[in-house]
Image (cartoon, rainbow over the protein chains, first blue to last red):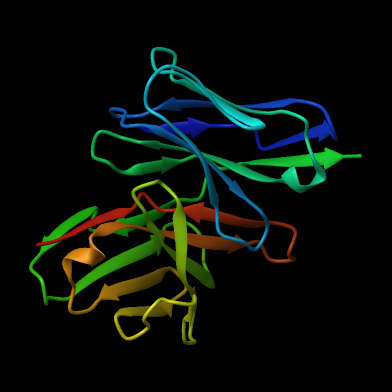
Length: 109
Length: 119
């Protein structure tokens, strides 16, 4: 079956760095997405990786290893507003999105 | 974990026809479901919030007469794109909100999406 795994919850300190991992097993691969979702709001697109490697976008970076079925989202210089759920989703060979359950990130002062 | 399904996964239709997309929560009851549209740059736009037994709440700029939403049961919401045009071609994603009795857990589960192509 198809499966996306990411930690349920993580806690980090303001100003620090946190890495949210996502592992996947899907039938085919057409890219991996990371979204940020604050409670009661629609998800906000963060990144899309289809090739191996690291993509940096400001304080957020996303890494992909297709051979390992692994991605991570790296958040630097954490701010209180970064407290949110982070969703990992993979598009499979049928261009269907397989979603992870989301990682709730709690930032403490 | 909870699963949300969508049907069909992809559909091609002629301009002017109507297309219905179903969103089902498979192992939980969802009083609230959401409909999103994914744009080419991957962002998700919330189109409307669907509440079981009542009218959907549409976001600003979304035509309610064009995108008909029905949430007739606790496990099913439908989005009907009426008189479809090529510009309606997109990837439509639904999500369902699982609120465990007592309010301790409030999680949104996303469907796999439906790719609509209007010729």
